[in-house]
Image (cartoon, rainbow, N blue to C red; front, side, top):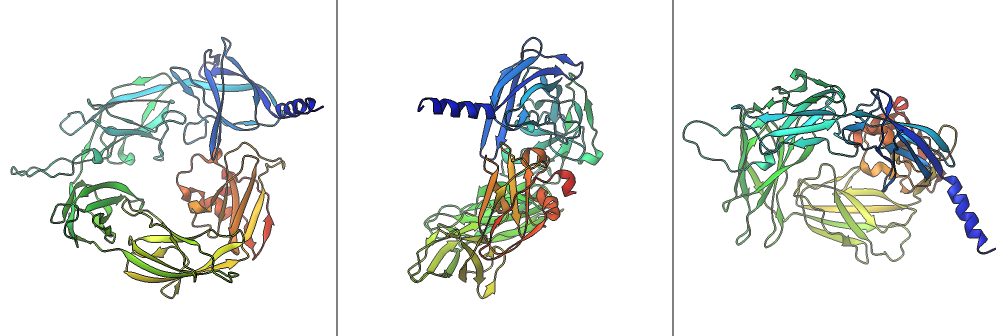
Length: 531
């Protein structure tokens, strides 16, 4: 009997899996494709599992014992690419839904001969430009992956040549010079000329997609004379001085961030100031820039973040004053602690983190709940307390007497007083994800969101779902929230965390009261629901 029980258990587990048979075809002529490496990729938040088979002469393939879940077909055959969904904004195949114990016998995998886009990137003199990023986008400016789970851009070689392989369609081709690959050193010219600087250019020679020509390419077509002539841009400069450099220290590092009209900042470059503290960033395009300086020896000093806007003229005389950073004196009040338990206070950079900003090391409270930070970079931070019991939450954060609802702004000042008050009675939300028929959803890349403000979605509002289709959120502060779930693989067109805002606005509002233990099953929202 002891030997028989494991065999019965294994048989039951095997019976829960599915079997899959199907055919791979060329979607153009509906003929079967032999020798295709058929892969079904199950993507979950923390793992990726791949099941594979090879099609025979009739294009037929089979897979036994495939666990239930959602799979993305990723077939491979030289000269072909997966046929994209007809209505998808980026070319991915339709997901395959596999139920427990299901026997799929007619799965059709469609492929199409790839198209080739090739050419050169040239400067205004007609000379090739190496190391330029070349991308293809659709009419909405969204990047098109060159292959499933692959890169969305190519890089020109030393001859300025690029070659990209992808599905047939209509595309814009965009070339973006790699400014970080060029020297920030500015040469001195006495002939009145200036070093050329080039901006992002759309095929064949347009500054924007509105003025560019779309390239239409059919299955199996090879277009290889797609030369892009880069546009010159006005070469702008940001320069200034780092002050407060201590004696016998190293040279200060100056960091630069850039934001275009999207208002999103991203890291751009950095350089060392000279021994006098002078710095200069050249060959810049119009836009908004942030600068910060730091030095690490003999002690770490940082400057405040300075922001400037470049339009048609240079920004000069920017001063970055080094200081010892911000001091923060604080107390932690924790109800129910007769003798305060020592806990760690952690500050995490909030918002668009600057390249030079690093989180200070956590500090541990003393036996009266007191704590002290020194040398904090002048930036915005969120406050976390560790460890926190499951029923506890941060009830209030008071900075210099003012109740703070968001991140701490430590960018304008030297010494602050902080009071952190924890509360008991945090809520718990847990449940199961179910489809429209009420069946548990397993093996899917599901996400659950809990946000107090439907107009502001943050990464900390996102919770991964367990492989068995359940979720649990602990330490929920009492209040009103929007709670919803989405299938990540069905929303691959969303770029950025803010893209989930329409779902939050349509989600049902729930209220979490003190000590609540809420059980809430969820059905993932679809795109149509969130419009």
